[in-house]
Length: 473
Image 1 (cartoon, rainbow, N blue to C red):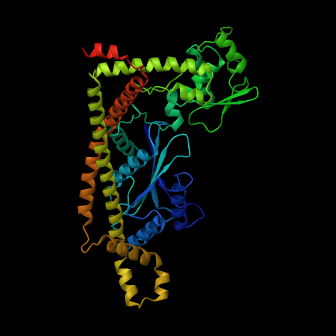
Image 2 (image 1 turned 45 degrees about the horizontal axis):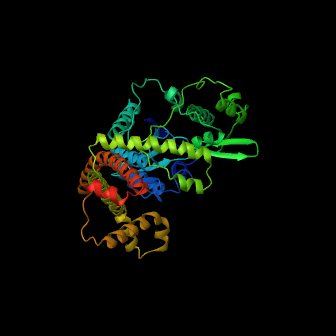
């Protein structure tokens, strides 16, 4: 579920337009927020020189139209901030969806960068595009209702990618936490409380079995002397089990009393423990390996029950899918794996070509924009003074020429033909991706079931020869 915010970006008070553009883009592309810059993409400009290229585009707009930009009043950049619900999307998918949103919104007419931030509890995109078109003939004009138009475009993309959207949003603006309401993710302390309640609901035999259940549900157990802490998945700092932090019912002593039945606590003070939807079939646990690694008797008892449940789930899965013979299961596993690999390869191939097209478009546009400057540079006899005055344009031109030589291009393709090819690849990728998600889930379930059956067959006791002969007869 994604929320959006549309932000016109004016000059920072007391600073120049150049400083403002660099500052805004530097904040968005901060390596500490974007996994070292890996989660940054661009269109119509190179992310390394995006600010300089956008400023150059604005200067060329002034030269081409004769209209002087009023930096004190005019908008320099526009930003779309797209925030996703915690745990619903991966950074890579958020980056891809952000790029598609930017391309649809700007229609490929404006330079933009997409930076995906992962430093907060929720993944969010900063989409920043130039206020001046790449053709240097127009400025983007904000319109009444642009905020709602951005939201609708983002919602369409979310639905296309099987993500939830905000149903019936109210016209009044709300903060991200406000509109989440009851769906707001729980705090680290609440996660630990819910985890403890859920583990105790399984009626562990003793404290060791309780700790094993907590570990199995994804919590990290930390013990130092008499103190006990749990680190919830996604948490950076462990939560101590003490009255001051979690309440009187969640201290080690209280937990022991609850295991022994001496203390009764009503389930969760706010909500019932929310557990992640488990996969239909889970892998069996190698109990002997865990015991050799130092697990105790409590864990062994819990793991045996867990394995029995998973074998029951495996049998149900095989029965529901008509895989009652091992040969059928093996054939289904091979088929689902082959289909998944085929779709994965097709998507990667399309993405690689789309990346090539985006890079080529950037180089072609950079080459076209700087061709006259470079011609003047040559006429000036490669003057150092001329180079110092037009260094950015000359470097862009040289980089584009080097890229064309590397690709062996004798004739440059048109921007229109590249955009058409990009749109065709994007449509094909969307179609494949919807099937890819289903194929991945199917493959995981089948391979998990097959692994469980293989494990059961490998540990089954060998039949005596006489019994084997009777079975064969």
